[in-house]
Length: 221
Image (tube, rainbow, N blue to C red; front, side, top):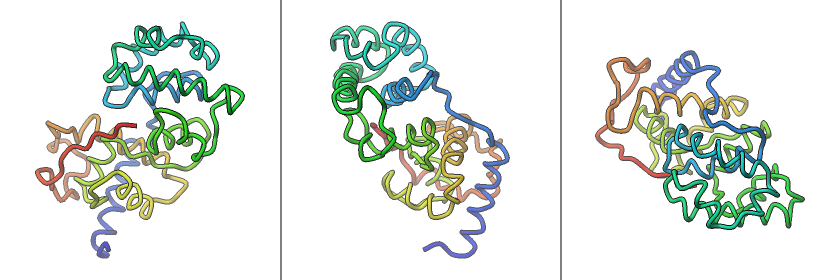
């Protein structure tokens, strides 16, 4: 349970992040919900910049569900070998596209339960697709969001699910999707994993600076 002082501090942190990163959005390059889903699956343990380098030729070769489903797993592997865990991701992309054709008429579903049934899709990936592609309020917790939230005291959690729960209790539902991007951008460009730039941090006066207590958590989906 947060004290009144902690609640007040957290609201000031969120207001500052909104002021600094308001308008921030996805850095993945995609044309539609399907390409976004593919890019987010590929982004696990990989930078968005590297994903974009891989998806450019991938989407030229297979821009839609039918085209990607027609590729063999080795063909997909060859196209995405520049990302980490590419063999497992290639298998998931093949199975995922086949399931989309079989069960959803080749369309990306807009329900969380349906998304999370797809190979390679967990809660984080589903949240990103729901939020960005369909405008459904969702707050995806990736490695950056987990790190920033727990370092700043916005959350006091040991796992992504608890972090998400605690953030959503403090942030109005209509701002969940935007807050996801504020936290990602702050983690990516300021509150970095190995070399946090505390001297230029816009919330340094509010941060409890518990950096040494918070480790990295790899969010795999």
